[in-house]
Image (tube, rainbow, N blue to C red; front, side, top):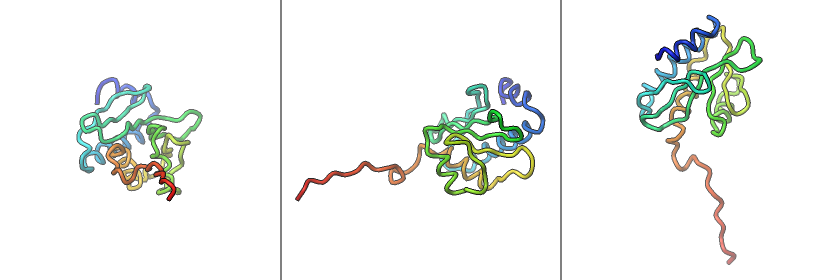
Length: 145
């Protein structure tokens, strides 16, 4: 972890920092266990720890932070232009709270829902590798007979 990223983690209250560090460890473990992801780049985006699949280009950026005006929660943010949060919400409607189309919200206390969160992280880390069959298809216009 770079000094800049460590400084951001250090600025969080202890209970938030511990939860975000748990999620950070899960991100790296999930990346290592997911074929084709490769090494992650850890950096800061918008002043928050961010994880990129620069080497493989397989996924979208994952950021960790604290959502505004949501005391007692932290967040795993993904690009709001993806369909990821809708997918997470449909697969895990009860496992998490969500913030719009941009974040999974996590309580800073209690057990971390590691299994469903790892699945969501894997989807984000491989977002750009989705098979063509998973992408929306344009409508085909047929000529009248």
